[in-house]
Image 1 (cartoon, chains in turn green, cyan):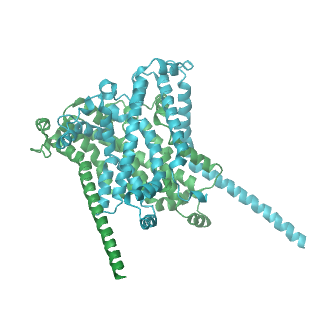
Image 2 (cartoon, chains in turn yellow, red):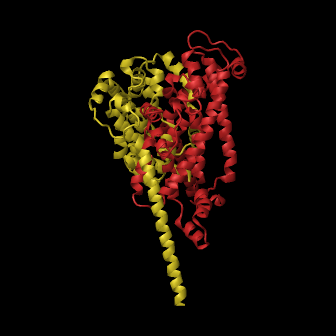
Image 3 (cartoon, one colour):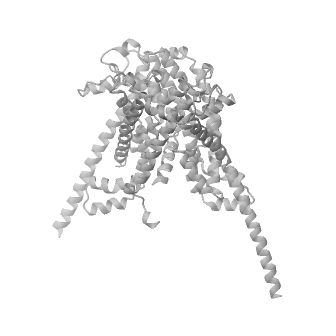
Amino acid sequence: MSAVAQNKTSHFQSVKFKKKIVKTIVFIILTLGSLLILSPIWWMIATSLKDMKEIMTYPPTFIPQEWHWSNYAETLQKAPFMRYTLNTLFITVLVVIGNVLSNSFIAYGFSKIQFKGRNVLFALVLATMMIPGFVTLIPQYVLYAKLGWLNTYLPLILPAFFGSAFFIFLLRQFFLTIPNELIEAAKIDGANHLYIWWKIIVPLAKPAIATVAIFSFNGAWNDFLGPLLFLNDSDMYTLQLGLQVFKGQNDTQWNFLMAGSLMVLIPVITLFFIFQRYFIEGMNLTAGSKG
Amino acid sequence: MQLNTDASSSLEKSKKTKRVMSLEKKESLQGYLFIAPWIIGFLVFMAGPLLFSLYGSFTNYNITSKMDFIGIENYIKMFTNDPLIWISLKNTLYYVALSVPLTTAGAVLLSVLLNQGVRGTRIFRTIYYLPAVLSGVGVYLLWMQLLSPSSGLVNTLLGWVGIEGPAWLSDPAWTKPALIFMKLWSLGGGMLLYLASLQGVSQSLYEAAEIDGANSFRKFWHITVPMITPVIFFDLVTSFIGAFQIFQEAYVMSDSGDGGPANSLVFFNLHMWNKAFEVFDMGYAMAMSWFLFIIILVLTVFNLVLAPRWVHYEGEDKK
């Protein structure tokens, strides 16, 4: 009897031991993987601080022998990055406002008000996600050209105020988790839908709305196709477009190119570390509704 | 007396139904009001352009002077008189066929590793996800430097393990693998999606399997994978659609869209872009866009049809 018991404990101990080994191996793999994932970012920082002679030496150095901080000042002098930043910020802020307002408004309609054809229309919203953007790109370009909106920010900003399928979907999923009793109670107190949307649902859905805000910030900040297509005047260029032009002018000046790239990426990296949980929240909402 | 109350109550009832009806109507109206921005956006930015592009694909539209109906001439030209379109289609299929399975498998594997509950999981998750939020020209420039044959990081690291790295972006055979390599760096988005769904898999399933003596591989294959198939399915469908539309990477990483060495980076959308906005052959470009749309549509339908064979929905039999 006791032999059996002992056998059992030793069995459990060996299972425990095995699990510990597995965990250690996984930990080592993940650590090596992390180094691999982070190395390009370190490489970018290092390259941005080297001079061209060092960049061209073989084998390459991982830590700059001399730290040329002046590369950043020179990069800023070579192209009007300040101008580009202001332009990009202007567009991005308006796009974020537009997306937050329109998508929460539309998602409220799709989740908290009963009306005929709601499900069919919502299916249509989802279906539009499957349409490749390039099919509508040329006609949209033609439309903006006829309206005389080329070389203005309108084509980049205005669509954000009319909702986007993915954000509507995301917010609707979140709104559905808010109990309807809250709305019924507010209605009895005489509140209308506009009031309930703005004063009850939006404050309760802050995490999901933050997710939408951050995703749309990222989208607008990184948008290259829109500015490339709609903007001609170099005074109006955004960072992405400016960087592309900068690339053409400084073909093999890797230190300046990396310095420029890093300056464009740093706001996104910073935002990521501050608001990480909202990025993850968005993914959880998406995964949750698919699982 | 009896009759009277009945009558009055029925009168009240009909009044009530009327009021309910009008309330319902009012409610409906408000519903439409709330989704009105989307409806307007859908008509102006989606439905209208779709119709315009469908009609335009049968014309010789060039945005300035002409828009004559020319029947299916654009489509005939596509199949008979534009060799580059087949090159672009081949390049695109190559990219799709490699990048989608690799990123999906990589993301699933990574999420399973991250779900083992080792120390520092949160930090690992942050690190692996970071590249996924970085995109745009800055990232492409970074990878052009990383992939630079003699002074780049990739070939330096390959050199450490005794592999002589290729010339990547200047060797026609390696340009597409280079882009796939870059894509793999940012598989953290998918990873996060899978991690979220893995955390929803009930622990009791694993415990039951352990009692039955299942090893780790069997547990992974028979419990983990089936439980996350709905997310894999969603990820595959959206990744396919996305991968077919690859454009920016090729545009920035070849010289402003010239298609790289030996046309190896001429993807379908890059070719379409050049047709539409370089030579303004917009009718033709719109026909091209419908061709791609149909390919994607067929593939998506194919995916949907195949789905019941391998996608496992929890609680399906209850429905």
